[in-house]
Amino acid sequence: QRAMLKELKGKTTETKSGHKIHLYANIGSTGDVASVLANDAEGIGLFRSEFIYLEKDNYPTEEEQFQIYKAVAQNMAGKKVIIRTLDIGADKQIDYFDMAHEENPAMGYRAIRICLDRPEVFKTQLRALFRASMFGNISIMYPMIISVTEVKQIKAIVAEVKKELTEQGIPFKDDVEQGVMIETPAAVMISDLLAKEVDFFSIGTNDLTQYTLAIDRQNAKLDNIYDSHHEAVLRMIQMVIDNAHKEGIWAGICGELGADTTLTERFIQMGIDELSVSPTFVLPVRKIVRELD
Ligand code: PEP
Ligand code: MG
Image 1: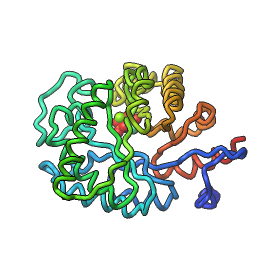
Image 2: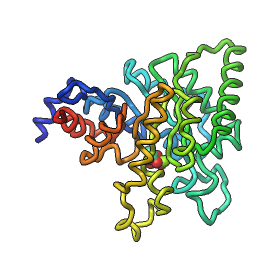
Image 3: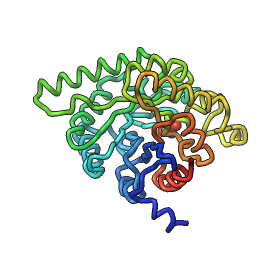
Image 4: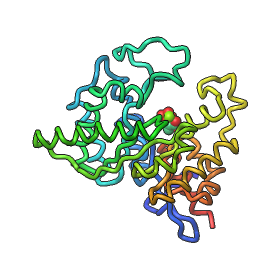
């Protein structure tokens, strides 16, 4: 089995009829980059940047973050690296953020909500990301979006960051691709509008399933009804892809469902452009795609 998968290294991820998709890997720390390369992923489709904050006992500085993003971009040598901005709250708590106890943290103060509420924290990360964009092929992705207003607020902050970097004579790439995660039902329903604002969509099926089915993804007691193949979620994925394509942008999946090989054929029929999976699933997914007509 393993030997057979090995033979798929260096091969494209395309069906027998020549329909290609992009197959990237998800990482949770810089240490995972070796595994991304060893499993021959075409790029990184989700870099969960929160580990940088979780590992420390105080806010990581711009320079610390810059060094990490730069190293990943350089190690990936021109391959796409999609870095997701800070996604804490809910299951990921950080002491120095000093967040109040919440009755319902999954629906609480988290991810982009924190970043927009605390622009100084957000800007530090954005500055590091834009500076690192000089050293490889970095894209930026924003989590937990529910509205166009949020995207406009993000853009205003990005514009400030770019202006400041320019004034300071610090180089950055002006055309860094920016996308949003589609992981709330609200984002799905307004994906036609969001598609006009961003360069790509990446569907976070872990949270999207949780919020669509109203089932806490962490609650083991509900595992038996947490149906990741629920038709509601699959229809949402189709809607997101269609709305993306109407505006000429691409749509992928970076939640765990992207690695579910029983759905690969269906995703391709839906028109998915990209799948981002844990490094060890890259070759098994490529194998399935190459067996499809
Ligand atoms: C998701 O929600 O599907 C996702 C990829 O993000 P995370 O699992 O980090 O919440
Ligand atoms: Mg998520």
